[in-house]
Each structure stands twice: as structure tokens, then as C-alpha cells.
Amino acid sequence: MFGKAVADEKHATRAALGRHMMIGERRTRRTIQTPLFGKHDARFLPMRTKGHSYHDCNARRVKLTEINLRGFAIQGCVPPIKLLICSHIVLFWRYEMRPWLQGFAVAVLTAVVMATSAVAEENSHGRTRFILAASWEPAFCATNQKKAECRNQSSNNFDAKNFSLHGLWPMRQEYCDVSDDLKQSDRSSDWKDLPAVQLSAETKASLDKVMPGTQSGLERHEWIKHGSCTKLSADDYFGTAVGLINELNASAVRDLFAQNIGKTLSADAIKAAFDKSFGAGASDRVKMSCRQVGKVRVISELTIGLSEDAIQPSPDGEPRLEQLIQSAGRTSFGCDQGVVDAAGF
Image 1: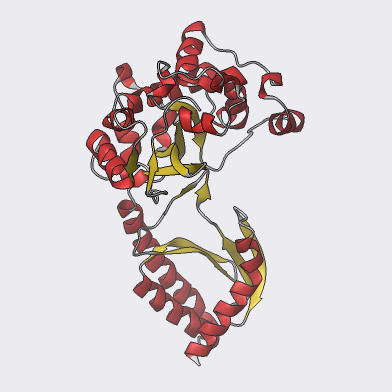
Image 2 (image 1 turned 45 degrees about the vertical axis):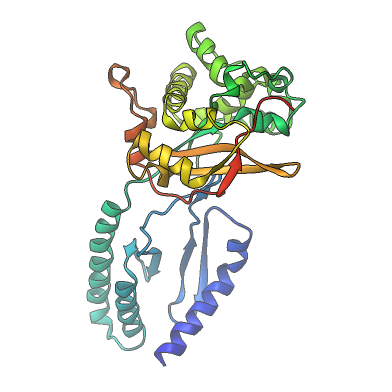
């Protein structure tokens, strides 16, 4: 009976939520009817955004997202063996337990989940709250040749041998307090038609150097879509992002790319450079994206997970990228190798 009950429950839950999982909805909550729990709330929370996939629980723990049983909501991360124990308790609770014992059972289940959740939180190496997106401009321009910033590419340009700033993105937040009209304009029109971003002369000069996309209005798009969710001024937001990309460009990662232009780099080599510059395990917070240009697969972008302190001011201008990376959650690395594209077409 136990095996059949579990199998029926899995089948019913998958049937109820399967359509939402397949279309990739970022947050799905539905009231469903299943044999084991009856009518209850179920929630599917894929931890994916901007090409990143983060794990709130480490590899040997199961995400127990939410169980809502007659008003009791439980959330946490548990090892598989304890999830099995919890399943036994819930099965007994559902089919055999007298009403006066049900509250005690839920209390026990909650204690198990929360106790293990605390351990999981400690072992998960923090959570990712921001993404630093660093583009390799020659690869971007290889498929965007008409962009203003790509028309005059040269091997002497700063962006030919350094990472370019794409953006600094809060996780799962976009277009905060932005009007529908402005949002629609951002999505459908030329970014140069968007409102200009108010920056000091110093910040603008620094940004123009590391973000060649300002020639196409990229900073206007980034501010409306992402910067609006940071509660910072535009000057502070872009000043922070410039500081972080400069730290990346002062690292062994940038040196590795600059020394291998036109050559293939493996994921292992890039990960080793990250760990050398930003501490052991830093590469576990990085994802590499590649794109096909003709018959060649080139490295187009690195997205780097950062902790919630990413937008906090740096005391005395001290380097802090290592700490921000180390306090973020882990992710898979992405493509396994790619060519470091040279400037020009």
C-alpha cells in the first residue's frame, strides 16, 4: 500500500504541475487534488535566471519547497533519508493518525525540516543575490556587426583585450516602479530613445570605457530594467558595477583571455584562473556562455554570482569581488570550452 500511495501521489502531482514546469514558469503555485494529501497547495520554484541556475540546497539535499497541510506550511532543505522519514510520518498522519495527534506529528515534521534546513543553509555557501555579467566584446560583435560599438573594432581598443560590462543584475527582479509605457519602450524600441541616465562626468567617463554598449544606449536599458531594483542612484549603481568589472579585469582571468586571443580555452583553465584570483571554489559561482560564429564556438560572456552585499559601498575602495563571489551560491559552469575571439570580423 505504501509504495502504491507514493507512486499515485507522484503521478498526480506531476500531472497537475507538469504543464507549468515544461513551459518554464518562474513561480507556479496551484491548489491541486492528489490521493495522499487530498486538496492542498503545491508550488514549483525553478531557481533559474539570466542563464544562471543556483542551488539553495547542496547536492545531497532535497529541496522541500512547501507542503501545506490543513493550514500548516513547512519549508526547508532536507537530506533524502530524512525526507523518507518525513514521508512515512505524513503517510501515517494521512491514513492512520487520530486528529488529536496530527498537530504533534506536524510539529515533529517541522522540527526535522527546520533543523536540517539550518545545516543546509550553512553548507550551501550563501545565496546569490546579484549577477555581474561580463561580455567578451569581439564575440558579441561577431554577431552584432551593425551595432554602433562594433563598427570600428580594433585590436588597440580597450574592449579587445578586456572584459566589457554588460550589467549588474538583481536576482529575479526587473523593472521596479517603471511605468508600463517605459517598459514597453525598453522592450520594443531603440534604446537611444529611452530617457538619458543622469551620471556625473567621472562616472560617465569610467562607464564609457568598460561598457562600449553605451554607444547604443545600453546603460539606459540596464538602468530601467535592472538598476531600478537596487534602490541606488544611477551614479552609485553604475559606479559600483564599474568597480566590480575593473576588479575582474585586474585578475588572472582577464590575463588568461588576453594571452589566448584566437585560441581555445577549456573550462578547467578558466576555472583555475578564477580560483587563483578569487579563492578556492570561486569558479563554482561562475557560468560561461558560448555562441556559434560560423563553424567556431566562441566564448561570449561570463556571468558571476555575487552576494547581497554587491551594492553596498566598498570601505576605502578596497577590493571586494572575492568576498562577494565566495558568499554567493553555486552554479554549473556552462559550456566546456570556446575560442577567445579576436577583434574584427
